[in-house]
Length: 72
Image (cartoon, rainbow, N blue to C red; front, side, top):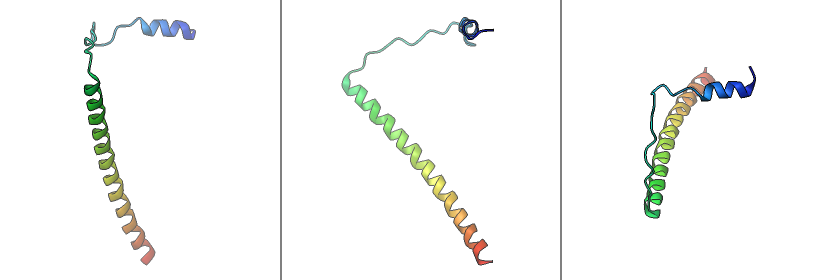
Protein backbone atom coordinates (compact mmCIF):
# COMPACT_ATOMS: atom_id res chain seq x y z
CA UNK A 1 0.00 0.00 0.00
CA UNK A 2 1.47 3.37 -0.92
CA UNK A 3 1.87 6.22 1.54
CA UNK A 4 -0.86 8.23 -0.20
CA UNK A 5 -3.39 5.40 0.04
CA UNK A 6 -2.47 4.78 3.69
CA UNK A 7 -2.99 8.46 4.51
CA UNK A 8 -6.36 8.49 2.77
CA UNK A 9 -7.48 5.35 4.57
CA UNK A 10 -6.51 6.64 8.00
CA UNK A 11 -7.84 10.15 7.36
CA UNK A 12 -11.32 8.97 6.38
CA UNK A 13 -11.93 7.22 9.70
CA UNK A 14 -13.95 9.00 12.36
CA UNK A 15 -12.49 9.55 15.85
CA UNK A 16 -13.52 7.13 18.55
CA UNK A 17 -15.88 9.67 20.12
CA UNK A 18 -18.05 9.80 17.01
CA UNK A 19 -19.01 13.18 15.60
CA UNK A 20 -17.26 15.63 17.85
CA UNK A 21 -17.66 19.29 17.11
CA UNK A 22 -15.06 21.90 17.90
CA UNK A 23 -15.65 24.56 20.49
CA UNK A 24 -16.72 27.88 19.06
CA UNK A 25 -13.92 30.42 18.81
CA UNK A 26 -14.13 33.15 21.44
CA UNK A 27 -12.26 36.33 20.64
CA UNK A 28 -10.02 37.44 23.52
CA UNK A 29 -8.85 40.94 24.23
CA UNK A 30 -5.08 41.59 24.23
CA UNK A 31 -5.21 41.84 28.03
CA UNK A 32 -6.81 38.39 28.31
CA UNK A 33 -4.19 36.92 25.97
CA UNK A 34 -1.32 38.34 28.04
CA UNK A 35 -2.90 37.19 31.30
CA UNK A 36 -3.36 33.66 29.97
CA UNK A 37 0.29 33.61 28.85
CA UNK A 38 1.37 34.73 32.31
CA UNK A 39 -0.73 31.99 33.93
CA UNK A 40 0.68 29.38 31.56
CA UNK A 41 4.23 30.48 32.41
CA UNK A 42 3.50 30.37 36.16
CA UNK A 43 2.24 26.81 35.79
CA UNK A 44 5.32 25.85 33.77
CA UNK A 45 7.66 27.35 36.34
CA UNK A 46 5.88 25.56 39.18
CA UNK A 47 6.16 22.25 37.32
CA UNK A 48 9.86 22.75 36.59
CA UNK A 49 10.52 23.73 40.22
CA UNK A 50 8.90 20.48 41.36
CA UNK A 51 11.03 18.52 38.89
CA UNK A 52 14.11 20.34 40.16
CA UNK A 53 13.25 19.46 43.77
CA UNK A 54 12.91 15.79 42.86
CA UNK A 55 16.19 15.82 40.95
CA UNK A 56 17.99 17.51 43.87
CA UNK A 57 16.62 14.87 46.27
CA UNK A 58 17.82 12.12 43.96
CA UNK A 59 21.25 13.74 43.68
CA UNK A 60 21.49 14.07 47.45
CA UNK A 61 20.70 10.38 47.90
CA UNK A 62 23.30 9.40 45.32
CA UNK A 63 25.91 11.65 46.95
CA UNK A 64 25.25 9.90 50.26
CA UNK A 65 25.75 6.53 48.58
CA UNK A 66 28.95 7.83 47.01
CA UNK A 67 30.31 8.86 50.44
CA UNK A 68 29.47 5.43 51.83
CA UNK A 69 31.17 3.68 48.92
CA UNK A 70 34.29 5.87 49.12
CA UNK A 71 34.64 5.37 52.87
CA UNK A 72 34.66 1.57 52.66
